[in-house]
Image (cartoon, rainbow, N blue to C red; front, side):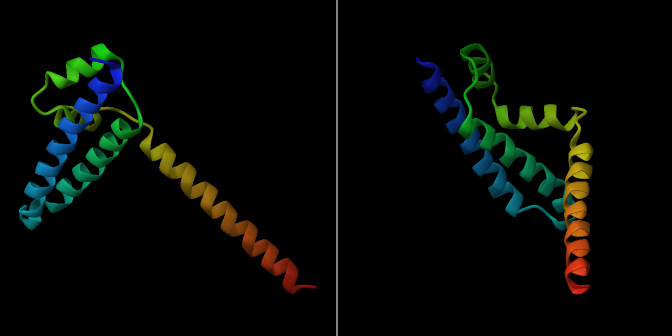
Length: 112
């Protein structure tokens, strides 16, 4: 089996797993909705990664041996320390500095 075949098989398995998760998500009671919404978004991001990228054969085969590889990856993500808040802060700073610059340019053009 080629690397591409392995990765396609893994993606298809995780895609089916995600479809089942979404079906379950639609039946979730409202008290669980917020935590499930976060999980849904992260799982979609993980799935997107596999749609666009290939893993080496050993890693791909290791995930294929898992009953629910996407769930395992989400749990790994959920316990992983990341720079997510740093990325959010960087986005906010970039966006607001652009707003400040626009405001400054607007005031400058009004003064003319």
